Length: 241
Picture 1 (tube, one colour):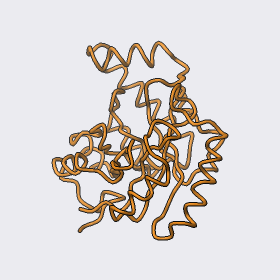
Picture 2: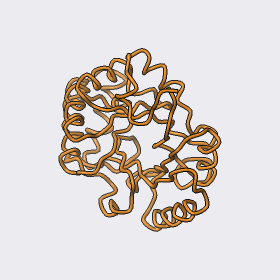
Picture 3: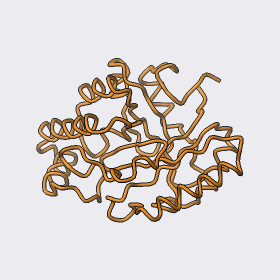
Picture 4: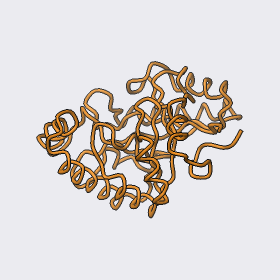
């Protein structure tokens, strides 16, 4: 299996260590045909990118497209769900992006603080409220699906926030939304990934690079794909060697 494009990478605009151009150059050196820059939406308390910086990134990517003709350079965002109704923190700028990735993260401004942080924390690390949180988190994702028509993928589903991958993947399959196997976090798990593809959902594999040297690194993803026995045609950014 060979990675064709890395659609989840971070830069100095959020909490990455390298510039957009350094990520692009690394992707080219590794033989990728595409790279997407996906820093965090503005709802993140520490790493969120504000509108002024988003416009600066858009302009920078447009210039890099002229400079590097041998690779597709896309502007995306890893938006954060910020409400139980599925609202994300990139509403005002959706027409700016080539790809919209969405995830649930800590350290964001979520409208139900006690539920989002305390109940999910107890569910993940102490086993309390686990079934309740899995059900409610899945409902939040599905509301997000129904709210937006242009979601490309959900990032590392099941990591920190429990979800019902059976229900979520069925909803994603209907809307052609990919579910990510993330090299940095190791989610989805092989078990969840197998359920997802059996329900017709497509898989995205991503480095979630925070350094340019990490762009295109998917070793952990490949192990998960192997354990889940997922075929190339079920993955949107992998091809046979």
